[in-house]
Image (cartoon, rainbow over all chains, first blue to last red):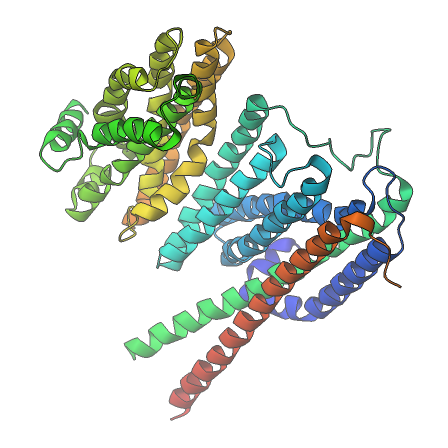
Length: 242
Length: 218
Length: 54
């Protein structure tokens, strides 16, 4: 039993069909519980007032926006090295989800920044990095759509993902160099004393779990769609030949 | 290798090759920005480093799609790919040719345009130096982007969407170096980082670009 | 039931609205694409099956 079994599209379809309802259910449960808990049952922060409730969307979305890109990087590498189609299709499936999370992080950040920093947008390193990440997602998705041959598209986007990751990381540090920011440090870290208080921390954890599960569910479903689309294209091509 | 370089240069110099187009575009940016933001000298001087760098970057972008597209259409890229010269070297030479016809003229023209934008005197040397160090990176990164979209019809817009995010670090360090230089501050850190990007991109991206071309020729 | 959001009500509600809207949109889009592709694939497979039989 190894994960490479799932490189077989048939095996992947079977397993994901069985797993998917549970992932959807858990994702909905976690998001429901976490967001309701966060929105209705947590107190206001003494400095931020009720805007602290935005954290339950902003932090998980931002985390998953980056993790989605990392997942695309890993699946792209697997595609380049081992030529498993499912892997390439999973990267393709993850991109729009990652883009959505990036936009959510930016939008909620703007709504939070307006009352807290007095501005919707600041050219802060973190904000700027996220804007640049949005551009990378857009370019990646656009390249998938522009190239017709699916294997060529998979190869080119995988190379773009690799090079893009290096430059995204470079941009992150370049931006840091360019402007010291307003943004507070990481809200979550295990080793630091200064952290969010427990009242906010537990619902936040549930929300993060919810976002992770939602991401997994969406990627699984979209990968299934991509596999079906690929099979459809193959059948159509055979029909034309016949 | 030498033959390829001279051939690329000759093609670029010919009418319609795009040589001069980038320069004209650069000039236009330097003229249009003051018309847009107003003639006030102090402000122009402050934004001049950024404007000149952004202008150079966009001018560089204009001619990127010509690096491989023409050779791809008439089939000479297939010949180059099967020639004894490694494709990585072809990419490097072509990027270098692109730099010679865009990056280098832009660097030479920049001080003249800096006059229009009222750049403080201390900034001129750093402007030229930063462009000299940074524009090769623009050409190499651009060659990588052009290699990705070489098989796409009308890929120009897609090319800019792919390449511009990759230009971010170069732009930041380049403009920062000029800005600091113009303000009389130390510029060694951004200049060193800029040089590092150029060297790193020059060393790695030809391989990525060659891989992309092989995929596109498959 | 509704918590008192004070003067930041707009920021909080807009954040939740926009985020949930975007999440809903990406889920709906994925479901819609999934259903469409599944239906089309079923049609084509049925056709391919007919030809194989006949």
